[in-house]
Image 1 (cartoon, protein in one colour):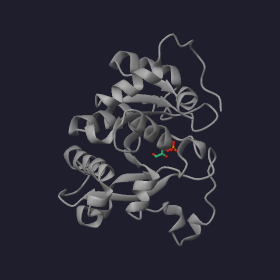
Image 2 (cartoon, rainbow, N blue to C red):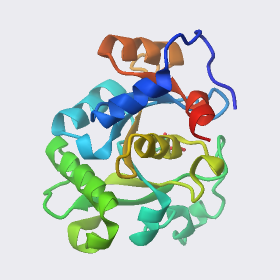
Image 3 (cartoon, rainbow, N blue to C red):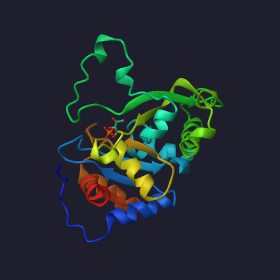
Image 4 (cartoon, rainbow, N blue to C red):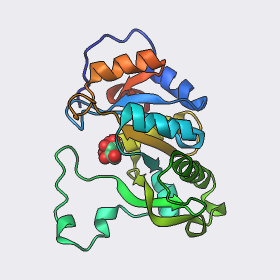
Length: 224
Ligand SMILES: O=C(CO)[C@H](O)[C@H](O)COP(=O)(O)O
């Protein structure tokens, strides 16, 4: 796996990212040039406020998803959704950048109305973090309805040893910060081109916003 490698690192990016997560702050994670080649804005799920959802819509622009650790997802019977769809479109799950996606089902908290507003999504997301902190004490079906407006992503069973997506990188960061295995990811898109925001532009955004920027390869070196 190669990183963008466009600048020498003089600081401890991984340490800064772990510290930010521990304080409930976001980080920018670029997976790899030879994978999605995307930078996601990533939050610890328990810290997501309506303002944070607004920031993801406005500054990132991709899908707002909650990555959950594999054991948590298993405790709630949350499947990899392509394994559950009985439709020809799901028969050949041919991704350009990985063996399979991490998509599970979509949910809304039962106390939401439409589920899409910043307030509704923040409620669903923080409740998912609470659920990840205490699977045994959570009535998942009593708390959430499906389908909804928050995409759940299920991390691979052996995390980074199995898969090196933002799903697994976000969960690894949450674990390193000693937080529940729940991280929100949202792809950063370029308003000019509609394509993935190039790494240099994502890094410039991170510097302007005082958010740590970290390469997937740096996280893999530290956590693998
Ligand atoms: O597909 C996605 C959900 O919007 C994103 O690209 C996100 O980055 C998580 O996926 P992955 O774990 O494959 O990187």
